[in-house]
Amino acid sequence: MSSKAIRIHAYGGPEVMQWEDVPTPEPGPGEALVHQGAVGLNYIDVYFRTGLYKSAAMPVTLGMEGAGTVKAVGPDVSDLKVGDRVAYAGAIGAYATERVIAADKLVKLPDGIDFKTAAAMMLQGMTAQYLLRRTYRVKSGDTILVHAAAGGVGLILCQWAKHLGATVIGVVSTEQKAELARAHGAAHTIIGHANLPAEVKRITGGGMVPVVYDSVGRDTFMPSLDSLAPLGTMVSYGNASGPVPPVDISILAAKGSLFLTRPSLATYTAKRADLEATANDLFDVVRNGAVKIQVNQTFPLKDAGAAHTALESRKTTGSTVLLP
Ligand code: NDP
Image 1 (tube, helix red, strand yellow):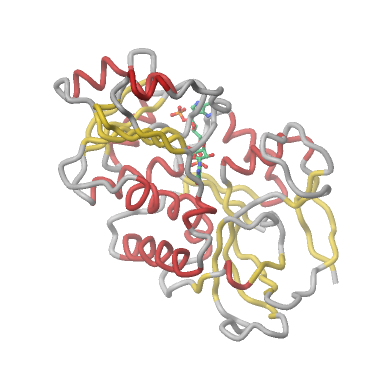
Image 2: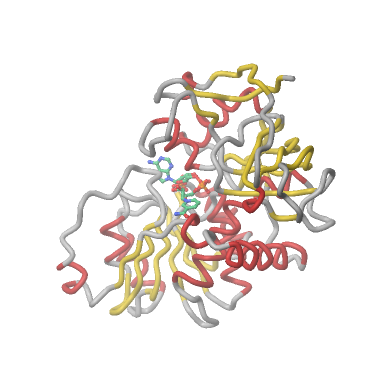
């Protein structure tokens, strides 16, 4: 039996991604075979393709997120059965028609959430959950700064933060993206980061913000620090413009006794109880309508290279799904 997968044999541009026949894997102990209904596209897939993040071996099947149906389970898997609808985030190997995955990475998908929506939201939505509820606990009345506010994580952060009673200032690159961010809960938008601290000062009446969610990295690190109130929290959670260069930590004192963290979803969902709580919180806000998952682009899985090109050239908004 064979299935299809997008694999890379070397790091590089989108052209290194190959649509290949691969043997359909057998689930071993603690594993399940998932027939995938939809696959999520995430910026982390670009980092694994370029080699910014390294994979354990080559060739590697890219992709961290998907949703589908359990087709087989390994000998000792008792809490999943053939036919269960499941979803996951954070396990490399998702760009495939069928894949094997550790069963404890899977969560059962509630009725009413289809595969496309699930594949669009598990990674970006659980990220928004831990960022807003755990890394810095957003309170009603907070004014917060969100970079890439019209992106996949960004549109979810805007809606969820508004639902929590926060005022969101969204940073985007175009007026069209600014409109989209406002339509999803951003109260204010700033185009570009050239005058970011001054703009934040104007919008907050000089108070600045208690937290910045910065996924852009190199280009925005300093303007983000300068947008924080004293004792503020800098959450640097991505590198879309490149990694942040090494920092002299004494600047955190000079800029107001700031907190700096570089969190990852893997840590926040490493324990099964945390994964379930994070996913359930996400399912709740999606099912009650507080957060609407915007799948603004879909591509056939075999055209994942074109999806990467669109994502890297800032042409996408909201979430993107690859269809096997
Ligand atoms: P997005 O949909 O947000 O796409 C990236 C966006 O970043 C672009 O649309 C663009 O928005 C902005 N951007 C700014 N500068 C650049 C640049 N030089 N090149 C490309 N894009 C740029 O992607 P995702 O929602 O998938 O991910 C968002 C970020 O969150 C990524 O950095 C990702 O790594 C990170 N992330 C981190 C996680 C964690 O746990 N640490 C988990 C999930 C995601 P604009 O044009 O408006 O500037």
